[in-house]
Length: 479
Image 1 (cartoon, helix red, strand yellow):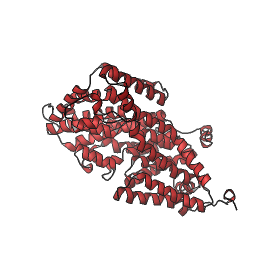
Image 2 (cartoon, rainbow, N blue to C red):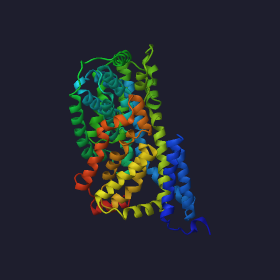
Image 3 (tube, rainbow, N blue to C red):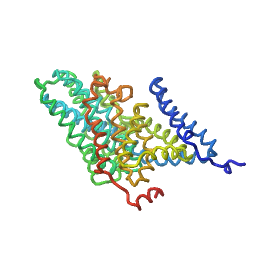
Image 4 (cartoon, one colour):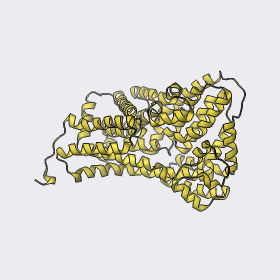
Protein backbone atom coordinates (compact mmCIF):
# COMPACT_ATOMS: atom_id res chain seq x y z
CA UNK A 1 0.00 0.00 0.00
CA UNK A 2 1.48 3.40 -1.00
CA UNK A 3 1.77 6.32 1.34
CA UNK A 4 -1.12 8.12 -0.34
CA UNK A 5 -3.35 5.07 0.11
CA UNK A 6 -2.78 4.72 3.84
CA UNK A 7 -6.00 4.64 5.81
CA UNK A 8 -6.21 7.52 8.24
CA UNK A 9 -7.40 6.87 11.77
CA UNK A 10 -9.15 9.30 14.05
CA UNK A 11 -6.89 10.11 17.01
CA UNK A 12 -7.97 9.20 20.50
CA UNK A 13 -8.06 11.88 23.17
CA UNK A 14 -4.79 10.58 24.59
CA UNK A 15 -3.11 10.68 21.18
CA UNK A 16 -4.34 14.22 20.62
CA UNK A 17 -3.44 15.45 24.08
CA UNK A 18 -0.04 13.75 24.39
CA UNK A 19 1.93 16.13 22.08
CA UNK A 20 0.55 19.13 23.96
CA UNK A 21 1.35 17.55 27.33
CA UNK A 22 4.82 16.59 26.08
CA UNK A 23 5.50 20.17 24.98
CA UNK A 24 4.28 21.64 28.28
CA UNK A 25 6.43 19.29 30.35
CA UNK A 26 9.44 19.77 28.07
CA UNK A 27 9.14 23.53 28.24
CA UNK A 28 8.79 23.39 32.03
CA UNK A 29 11.97 21.39 32.40
CA UNK A 30 13.90 22.76 29.46
CA UNK A 31 13.10 26.46 29.69
CA UNK A 32 12.14 26.78 33.34
CA UNK A 33 14.86 24.61 34.91
CA UNK A 34 17.63 23.96 32.39
CA UNK A 35 17.31 27.39 30.71
CA UNK A 36 17.37 25.85 27.21
CA UNK A 37 16.09 27.93 24.30
CA UNK A 38 12.42 27.51 23.47
CA UNK A 39 12.72 26.88 19.72
CA UNK A 40 14.45 23.44 19.75
CA UNK A 41 11.99 22.19 22.37
CA UNK A 42 9.05 23.13 20.17
CA UNK A 43 10.72 21.46 17.18
CA UNK A 44 11.15 18.26 19.20
CA UNK A 45 7.51 18.51 20.27
CA UNK A 46 6.55 18.88 16.60
CA UNK A 47 8.57 15.73 15.85
CA UNK A 48 6.64 13.84 18.55
CA UNK A 49 3.37 15.11 17.10
CA UNK A 50 4.55 14.10 13.62
CA UNK A 51 5.35 10.58 14.83
CA UNK A 52 1.83 10.16 16.19
CA UNK A 53 0.36 11.65 12.99
CA UNK A 54 2.38 9.14 10.95
CA UNK A 55 0.99 6.27 13.02
CA UNK A 56 -2.48 7.65 12.33
CA UNK A 57 -1.86 7.34 8.59
CA UNK A 58 -0.56 10.77 7.58
CA UNK A 59 2.52 10.98 5.38
CA UNK A 60 5.17 13.70 5.41
CA UNK A 61 3.72 15.54 2.40
CA UNK A 62 0.40 15.95 4.20
CA UNK A 63 2.02 17.09 7.43
CA UNK A 64 4.24 19.49 5.48
CA UNK A 65 1.14 20.95 3.83
CA UNK A 66 -0.33 21.62 7.27
CA UNK A 67 2.88 23.29 8.44
CA UNK A 68 3.09 25.44 5.30
CA UNK A 69 -0.53 26.52 5.72
CA UNK A 70 0.12 27.74 9.27
CA UNK A 71 3.38 29.48 8.35
CA UNK A 72 1.68 31.18 5.40
CA UNK A 73 -0.89 32.51 7.83
CA UNK A 74 1.94 33.94 9.92
CA UNK A 75 3.70 35.72 7.05
CA UNK A 76 1.74 39.02 7.24
CA UNK A 77 2.59 39.42 10.94
CA UNK A 78 6.20 38.47 10.21
CA UNK A 79 6.44 41.25 7.65
CA UNK A 80 5.04 43.68 10.20
CA UNK A 81 7.60 42.53 12.78
CA UNK A 82 10.39 43.19 10.30
CA UNK A 83 8.91 46.59 9.57
CA UNK A 84 8.85 47.33 13.30
CA UNK A 85 12.58 46.54 13.46
CA UNK A 86 13.20 48.93 10.59
CA UNK A 87 11.13 51.65 12.23
CA UNK A 88 12.79 51.47 15.64
CA UNK A 89 16.24 51.56 14.07
CA UNK A 90 15.31 54.58 11.95
CA UNK A 91 13.73 56.42 14.91
CA UNK A 92 16.95 55.98 16.85
CA UNK A 93 18.86 57.25 13.83
CA UNK A 94 16.66 60.33 13.47
CA UNK A 95 16.75 61.11 17.20
CA UNK A 96 12.98 60.82 17.61
CA UNK A 97 13.01 58.37 20.54
CA UNK A 98 15.96 60.01 22.34
CA UNK A 99 14.19 63.39 22.17
CA UNK A 100 11.00 61.98 23.66
CA UNK A 101 12.98 60.52 26.56
CA UNK A 102 15.04 63.70 27.01
CA UNK A 103 12.03 65.96 27.46
CA UNK A 104 9.87 63.33 29.15
CA UNK A 105 12.28 63.12 32.09
CA UNK A 106 11.91 66.87 32.71
CA UNK A 107 8.20 66.74 33.60
CA UNK A 108 8.50 64.34 36.57
CA UNK A 109 6.99 65.72 39.81
CA UNK A 110 7.20 63.92 43.19
CA UNK A 111 3.49 64.12 44.02
CA UNK A 112 2.59 62.75 40.61
CA UNK A 113 5.55 60.42 40.33
CA UNK A 114 3.48 57.24 39.98
CA UNK A 115 1.07 58.80 37.50
CA UNK A 116 3.96 60.28 35.55
CA UNK A 117 5.88 57.01 35.58
CA UNK A 118 2.87 55.19 34.17
CA UNK A 119 2.04 57.79 31.52
CA UNK A 120 5.59 58.35 30.24
CA UNK A 121 6.28 54.62 30.13
CA UNK A 122 2.98 54.08 28.32
CA UNK A 123 3.73 56.79 25.75
CA UNK A 124 7.23 55.52 25.04
CA UNK A 125 6.19 51.87 24.82
CA UNK A 126 3.30 52.79 22.52
CA UNK A 127 5.62 54.72 20.23
CA UNK A 128 8.35 52.07 20.16
CA UNK A 129 6.25 48.95 20.70
CA UNK A 130 8.64 47.54 23.29
CA UNK A 131 8.01 47.16 27.00
CA UNK A 132 11.61 46.14 27.68
CA UNK A 133 13.00 49.17 25.89
CA UNK A 134 10.65 51.49 27.77
CA UNK A 135 11.53 50.00 31.16
CA UNK A 136 15.23 49.83 30.32
CA UNK A 137 15.45 53.51 29.37
CA UNK A 138 12.85 55.86 30.80
CA UNK A 139 12.02 53.30 33.51
CA UNK A 140 15.59 53.33 34.79
CA UNK A 141 15.57 57.14 34.79
CA UNK A 142 12.31 57.24 36.74
CA UNK A 143 13.64 54.76 39.30
CA UNK A 144 16.66 57.03 39.73
CA UNK A 145 14.36 59.98 40.39
CA UNK A 146 12.35 57.92 42.87
CA UNK A 147 15.51 56.95 44.72
CA UNK A 148 16.67 60.56 44.85
CA UNK A 149 13.33 61.67 46.26
CA UNK A 150 13.22 58.87 48.81
CA UNK A 151 9.97 57.51 47.34
CA UNK A 152 8.96 53.83 47.84
CA UNK A 153 10.48 51.93 44.92
CA UNK A 154 7.99 49.07 44.60
CA UNK A 155 4.98 51.25 43.59
CA UNK A 156 7.12 53.18 41.12
CA UNK A 157 8.46 49.99 39.58
CA UNK A 158 4.91 48.62 39.31
CA UNK A 159 3.77 51.81 37.56
CA UNK A 160 6.68 51.56 35.11
CA UNK A 161 5.91 47.91 34.34
CA UNK A 162 2.20 48.66 33.87
CA UNK A 163 2.90 51.63 31.64
CA UNK A 164 5.47 49.69 29.64
CA UNK A 165 2.99 46.91 28.96
CA UNK A 166 0.27 49.39 28.02
CA UNK A 167 2.18 50.03 24.80
CA UNK A 168 3.27 46.42 24.44
CA UNK A 169 -0.43 45.60 24.43
CA UNK A 170 -1.75 48.40 22.18
CA UNK A 171 1.09 49.59 19.96
CA UNK A 172 0.89 48.51 16.29
CA UNK A 173 4.69 48.16 16.50
CA UNK A 174 4.58 45.61 19.32
CA UNK A 175 5.35 42.00 18.43
CA UNK A 176 2.63 40.66 20.75
CA UNK A 177 0.08 43.12 19.38
CA UNK A 178 0.76 41.62 15.98
CA UNK A 179 0.95 38.02 17.18
CA UNK A 180 -2.46 38.07 18.90
CA UNK A 181 -4.53 38.85 15.77
CA UNK A 182 -2.30 36.47 13.83
CA UNK A 183 -3.11 33.62 16.21
CA UNK A 184 -6.81 34.52 16.42
CA UNK A 185 -7.46 35.34 12.76
CA UNK A 186 -8.43 38.99 13.26
CA UNK A 187 -7.00 42.19 11.78
CA UNK A 188 -4.38 44.33 13.51
CA UNK A 189 -6.22 47.64 13.88
CA UNK A 190 -9.61 46.11 14.65
CA UNK A 191 -7.81 44.12 17.33
CA UNK A 192 -6.30 47.30 18.80
CA UNK A 193 -9.66 49.10 18.81
CA UNK A 194 -11.37 46.10 20.43
CA UNK A 195 -8.78 46.02 23.22
CA UNK A 196 -9.87 49.50 24.30
CA UNK A 197 -12.94 47.91 25.96
CA UNK A 198 -10.71 46.35 28.61
CA UNK A 199 -7.60 48.54 28.48
CA UNK A 200 -9.27 51.93 29.02
CA UNK A 201 -11.12 50.86 32.21
CA UNK A 202 -7.94 49.15 33.48
CA UNK A 203 -5.97 52.33 32.75
CA UNK A 204 -8.48 54.50 34.60
CA UNK A 205 -8.32 52.24 37.65
CA UNK A 206 -4.51 52.32 37.48
CA UNK A 207 -4.36 56.12 37.32
CA UNK A 208 -6.79 56.45 40.26
CA UNK A 209 -4.65 54.12 42.38
CA UNK A 210 -1.43 55.91 41.41
CA UNK A 211 -2.94 59.34 42.04
CA UNK A 212 -4.21 58.45 45.52
CA UNK A 213 -0.95 56.78 46.54
CA UNK A 214 1.14 59.56 44.99
CA UNK A 215 -0.64 62.32 46.90
CA UNK A 216 1.02 61.01 50.04
CA UNK A 217 4.50 61.51 48.57
CA UNK A 218 6.55 64.37 49.99
CA UNK A 219 9.82 65.94 48.98
CA UNK A 220 11.28 68.54 46.69
CA UNK A 221 11.69 68.13 42.97
CA UNK A 222 15.23 67.00 42.33
CA UNK A 223 17.41 65.81 39.48
CA UNK A 224 19.39 62.72 40.45
CA UNK A 225 22.83 62.20 39.01
CA UNK A 226 21.67 59.38 36.74
CA UNK A 227 19.03 61.61 35.13
CA UNK A 228 21.49 64.49 34.73
CA UNK A 229 23.94 62.15 33.06
CA UNK A 230 21.21 60.78 30.80
CA UNK A 231 20.14 64.23 29.62
CA UNK A 232 23.69 65.52 29.31
CA UNK A 233 24.88 62.67 27.13
CA UNK A 234 21.76 62.64 24.97
CA UNK A 235 22.15 66.39 24.49
CA UNK A 236 25.75 65.87 23.34
CA UNK A 237 24.81 63.13 20.88
CA UNK A 238 21.71 64.57 19.20
CA UNK A 239 20.34 67.86 17.90
CA UNK A 240 16.81 68.56 19.13
CA UNK A 241 14.34 69.81 16.54
CA UNK A 242 10.55 69.81 16.21
CA UNK A 243 11.01 67.92 12.94
CA UNK A 244 11.93 64.84 14.96
CA UNK A 245 8.27 64.45 15.93
CA UNK A 246 7.10 64.17 12.31
CA UNK A 247 7.68 60.38 12.17
CA UNK A 248 5.37 60.00 15.18
CA UNK A 249 2.75 62.16 13.47
CA UNK A 250 2.98 60.07 10.31
CA UNK A 251 2.50 56.81 12.18
CA UNK A 252 -0.43 58.11 14.23
CA UNK A 253 -1.96 59.67 11.13
CA UNK A 254 -1.59 56.44 9.19
CA UNK A 255 -3.29 54.55 12.01
CA UNK A 256 -6.21 57.01 12.15
CA UNK A 257 -6.60 57.02 8.37
CA UNK A 258 -6.42 53.21 8.33
CA UNK A 259 -3.60 53.21 5.80
CA UNK A 260 -1.88 49.87 5.08
CA UNK A 261 0.38 49.10 8.03
CA UNK A 262 3.51 47.88 6.27
CA UNK A 263 3.77 50.62 3.60
CA UNK A 264 3.17 53.24 6.31
CA UNK A 265 5.97 51.83 8.46
CA UNK A 266 8.38 51.49 5.55
CA UNK A 267 7.66 55.00 4.30
CA UNK A 268 8.08 56.46 7.79
CA UNK A 269 11.35 54.55 8.26
CA UNK A 270 12.82 56.00 5.07
CA UNK A 271 11.62 59.47 6.03
CA UNK A 272 13.20 59.06 9.48
CA UNK A 273 16.55 58.18 7.90
CA UNK A 274 16.35 61.36 5.83
CA UNK A 275 15.64 63.39 8.99
CA UNK A 276 18.62 61.77 10.69
CA UNK A 277 20.84 62.87 7.81
CA UNK A 278 19.47 66.42 7.70
CA UNK A 279 19.05 67.18 11.41
CA UNK A 280 21.70 64.98 13.02
CA UNK A 281 24.26 65.02 10.21
CA UNK A 282 24.53 61.22 10.16
CA UNK A 283 25.54 59.37 6.99
CA UNK A 284 23.27 57.49 4.61
CA UNK A 285 25.38 54.36 5.08
CA UNK A 286 24.75 54.38 8.83
CA UNK A 287 21.08 55.00 8.13
CA UNK A 288 20.87 51.77 6.15
CA UNK A 289 22.86 49.93 8.82
CA UNK A 290 20.38 51.18 11.44
CA UNK A 291 17.49 49.74 9.43
CA UNK A 292 18.98 46.26 9.26
CA UNK A 293 21.40 45.82 12.16
CA UNK A 294 20.08 48.52 14.48
CA UNK A 295 21.41 51.90 15.57
CA UNK A 296 24.77 51.98 17.33
CA UNK A 297 26.17 54.63 19.62
CA UNK A 298 29.32 54.94 17.51
CA UNK A 299 27.22 56.55 14.76
CA UNK A 300 26.75 59.67 16.89
CA UNK A 301 30.46 60.43 16.98
CA UNK A 302 30.33 60.81 20.78
CA UNK A 303 33.84 60.30 22.16
CA UNK A 304 33.28 60.33 25.92
CA UNK A 305 32.59 57.40 28.23
CA UNK A 306 29.02 56.27 27.68
CA UNK A 307 26.77 55.16 30.55
CA UNK A 308 25.10 51.75 30.47
CA UNK A 309 21.72 53.49 30.46
CA UNK A 310 22.56 55.32 27.25
CA UNK A 311 23.90 52.16 25.62
CA UNK A 312 20.62 50.40 26.41
CA UNK A 313 18.77 53.27 24.81
CA UNK A 314 20.88 53.69 21.69
CA UNK A 315 21.96 50.21 20.58
CA UNK A 316 18.54 48.98 19.46
CA UNK A 317 16.32 48.40 16.47
CA UNK A 318 16.86 46.89 13.04
CA UNK A 319 15.39 43.85 11.33
CA UNK A 320 17.98 41.64 13.04
CA UNK A 321 16.47 42.47 16.43
CA UNK A 322 13.19 40.69 15.62
CA UNK A 323 14.68 37.61 13.93
CA UNK A 324 14.44 35.43 17.05
CA UNK A 325 10.74 36.28 17.37
CA UNK A 326 9.99 35.23 13.79
CA UNK A 327 11.89 31.96 14.25
CA UNK A 328 9.83 31.19 17.36
CA UNK A 329 6.63 31.93 15.44
CA UNK A 330 7.58 29.54 12.64
CA UNK A 331 8.46 26.79 15.13
CA UNK A 332 5.14 27.22 16.93
CA UNK A 333 3.26 27.24 13.63
CA UNK A 334 5.03 24.02 12.63
CA UNK A 335 3.81 22.28 15.77
CA UNK A 336 0.31 23.73 15.33
CA UNK A 337 0.19 22.67 11.67
CA UNK A 338 0.86 19.01 12.46
CA UNK A 339 -1.60 18.67 15.34
CA UNK A 340 -4.22 20.55 13.30
CA UNK A 341 -4.07 18.64 10.01
CA UNK A 342 -3.94 15.27 11.80
CA UNK A 343 -7.11 16.00 13.76
CA UNK A 344 -5.36 15.85 17.15
CA UNK A 345 -6.25 19.45 17.97
CA UNK A 346 -9.90 18.87 17.09
CA UNK A 347 -10.14 15.90 19.46
CA UNK A 348 -8.74 17.94 22.38
CA UNK A 349 -10.98 20.92 21.61
CA UNK A 350 -14.11 18.83 21.25
CA UNK A 351 -13.49 17.23 24.63
CA UNK A 352 -12.80 20.61 26.22
CA UNK A 353 -15.80 22.37 24.68
CA UNK A 354 -18.23 19.69 25.87
CA UNK A 355 -17.94 21.37 29.25
CA UNK A 356 -18.17 24.95 27.98
CA UNK A 357 -21.59 26.24 27.00
CA UNK A 358 -21.57 30.03 27.39
CA UNK A 359 -19.54 32.94 26.05
CA UNK A 360 -18.28 33.58 29.56
CA UNK A 361 -17.15 29.99 29.80
CA UNK A 362 -15.26 30.19 26.51
CA UNK A 363 -13.46 33.38 27.57
CA UNK A 364 -12.64 31.88 30.98
CA UNK A 365 -11.29 28.75 29.29
CA UNK A 366 -9.12 30.94 27.05
CA UNK A 367 -7.80 32.88 30.04
CA UNK A 368 -7.07 29.64 31.89
CA UNK A 369 -5.16 28.33 28.88
CA UNK A 370 -3.11 31.53 28.66
CA UNK A 371 -2.41 31.36 32.40
CA UNK A 372 -1.26 27.75 32.13
CA UNK A 373 1.09 28.35 29.21
CA UNK A 374 2.43 31.58 30.74
CA UNK A 375 3.13 30.02 34.14
CA UNK A 376 4.68 26.90 32.66
CA UNK A 377 6.79 28.52 29.94
CA UNK A 378 7.16 32.12 31.13
CA UNK A 379 6.91 33.11 27.46
CA UNK A 380 4.41 35.72 26.24
CA UNK A 381 4.65 34.54 22.62
CA UNK A 382 3.69 30.97 23.48
CA UNK A 383 0.92 32.14 25.84
CA UNK A 384 -0.60 33.84 22.79
CA UNK A 385 0.19 31.40 19.99
CA UNK A 386 -0.79 28.11 21.62
CA UNK A 387 -4.17 29.16 23.13
CA UNK A 388 -4.84 31.10 19.92
CA UNK A 389 -4.51 27.97 17.83
CA UNK A 390 -6.54 25.97 20.36
CA UNK A 391 -9.51 28.33 20.40
CA UNK A 392 -9.44 29.93 16.95
CA UNK A 393 -12.06 27.66 15.36
CA UNK A 394 -14.07 27.40 18.58
CA UNK A 395 -14.82 31.14 18.64
CA UNK A 396 -15.97 31.07 15.01
CA UNK A 397 -18.10 27.99 15.63
CA UNK A 398 -19.80 29.77 18.56
CA UNK A 399 -20.36 32.84 16.31
CA UNK A 400 -17.85 34.97 18.23
CA UNK A 401 -15.73 37.35 16.18
CA UNK A 402 -11.99 36.46 16.19
CA UNK A 403 -11.17 39.87 17.65
CA UNK A 404 -12.80 38.70 20.90
CA UNK A 405 -10.20 35.95 21.01
CA UNK A 406 -7.26 38.20 20.11
CA UNK A 407 -8.28 40.66 22.84
CA UNK A 408 -8.49 37.89 25.43
CA UNK A 409 -5.08 36.56 24.37
CA UNK A 410 -3.53 39.98 24.99
CA UNK A 411 -5.43 40.59 28.24
CA UNK A 412 -4.34 37.28 29.76
CA UNK A 413 -1.19 36.40 27.84
CA UNK A 414 0.99 39.42 27.10
CA UNK A 415 0.60 41.32 30.38
CA UNK A 416 0.74 38.34 32.74
CA UNK A 417 4.29 37.20 31.94
CA UNK A 418 6.18 40.10 33.65
CA UNK A 419 4.38 39.21 36.88
CA UNK A 420 5.90 35.71 36.86
CA UNK A 421 9.27 35.75 38.71
CA UNK A 422 10.82 32.88 36.71
CA UNK A 423 9.88 34.31 33.31
CA UNK A 424 12.39 36.19 31.17
CA UNK A 425 10.23 39.32 31.38
CA UNK A 426 9.88 39.08 35.16
CA UNK A 427 13.62 38.58 35.57
CA UNK A 428 14.39 41.47 33.22
CA UNK A 429 12.02 43.91 34.91
CA UNK A 430 13.23 42.93 38.38
CA UNK A 431 16.90 43.29 37.46
CA UNK A 432 16.45 46.47 35.43
CA UNK A 433 14.28 48.32 37.96
CA UNK A 434 15.99 46.91 41.06
CA UNK A 435 12.76 45.66 42.67
CA UNK A 436 11.80 41.96 43.11
CA UNK A 437 8.91 40.80 40.96
CA UNK A 438 6.70 39.86 43.93
CA UNK A 439 7.12 43.39 45.34
CA UNK A 440 6.14 45.35 42.23
CA UNK A 441 3.41 42.83 41.24
CA UNK A 442 0.57 44.42 43.29
CA UNK A 443 1.37 47.83 41.81
CA UNK A 444 1.30 46.73 38.18
CA UNK A 445 -2.44 47.41 38.27
CA UNK A 446 -3.03 47.45 34.50
CA UNK A 447 -1.53 44.00 34.11
CA UNK A 448 -4.22 42.24 36.12
CA UNK A 449 -7.17 44.65 35.90
CA UNK A 450 -7.40 43.99 32.15
CA UNK A 451 -8.13 40.35 32.97
CA UNK A 452 -10.79 41.37 35.48
CA UNK A 453 -12.58 43.54 32.91
CA UNK A 454 -12.24 40.81 30.26
CA UNK A 455 -14.17 38.45 32.53
CA UNK A 456 -16.79 41.10 33.32
CA UNK A 457 -17.37 41.82 29.63
CA UNK A 458 -17.59 38.12 28.81
CA UNK A 459 -20.41 37.49 31.30
CA UNK A 460 -22.29 40.75 30.64
CA UNK A 461 -21.95 40.63 26.86
CA UNK A 462 -20.69 44.21 26.74
CA UNK A 463 -18.02 44.68 24.09
CA UNK A 464 -18.51 41.15 22.72
CA UNK A 465 -18.83 41.16 18.92
CA UNK A 466 -20.90 38.41 17.34
CA UNK A 467 -20.63 36.96 13.84
CA UNK A 468 -23.55 36.86 11.43
CA UNK A 469 -24.28 33.47 9.84
CA UNK A 470 -22.77 34.77 6.60
CA UNK A 471 -19.57 35.94 8.32
CA UNK A 472 -19.31 32.64 10.17
CA UNK A 473 -19.62 30.66 6.95
CA UNK A 474 -17.12 32.86 5.16
CA UNK A 475 -14.54 32.48 7.94
CA UNK A 476 -15.04 28.74 8.20
CA UNK A 477 -14.48 28.45 4.45
CA UNK A 478 -11.38 30.63 4.72
CA UNK A 479 -12.71 33.22 2.29
